[in-house]
View 1 (spheres, one colour):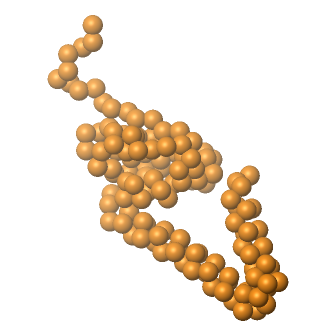
View 2 (view 1 turned 90 degrees about the horizontal axis):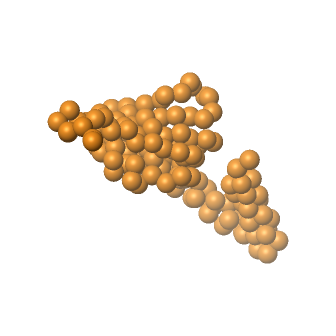
View 3 (view 1 turned 60 degrees about the horizontal axis):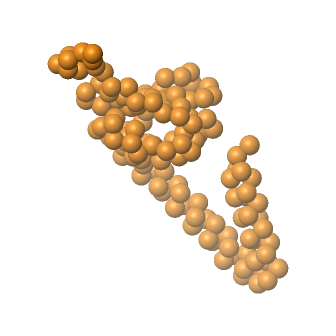
Length: 137
């Protein structure tokens, strides 16, 4: 189970309880206002990322090699969408775990990313063979 799914709500409830104990209803109002502001900031960022992604073709990235270099295990799907500015081309069935998405660039190189629980578990870069390159000895 994801630690953040439990910790964040418990920390919010604890902050409200502590604010009530120390400052009464004025403290609850201040902490609740801060929590709502934090939620609105995250929601606004998500909407901005998805708005930018809506203007690009699905599964397209400027450079698959650069994307591969920037990826790190554990980043969220939303972070990868923000980096690529495009939604990934789904490679797995809908609502199936793990989720697999692919981003392809203009040279037909592509990065295939596997997400487990919304976090990047692994990624692989594929570069097509160039017809002009001599065969390896």
